[in-house]
Image 1: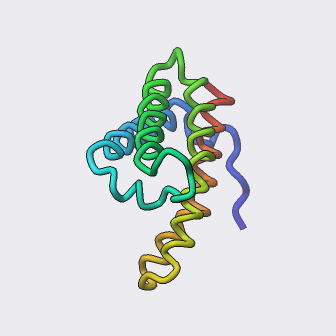
Image 2 (image 1 turned 90 degrees about the vertical axis):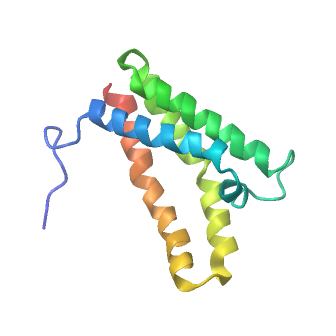
Length: 131
């Protein structure tokens, strides 16, 4: 049995922040460069059209990446990242429902995204609380 990470074993919040900044920055750019896959996981029932939400989440990811990259705004970036990761969670749920009829590998990908969001939220929380 392994014990939980102690404070000294936990990932450095600065390194976590830079990794999140790089990932969010890349994904934010992809939202604009190739929006169709993101449109497909936005619930059709939302007002304003799916592309609006794709672009809005891309802007949120790019803005959050910028906050995380700068040490002076890193704490705010951690909070913003938590909110972004929580905010896009409904799209992951919608994707899992929409992909239920797809081949098994695709269903597994859609389902795996759900619990994988939790460590991302917790990492963002660590950056927020310890930066």
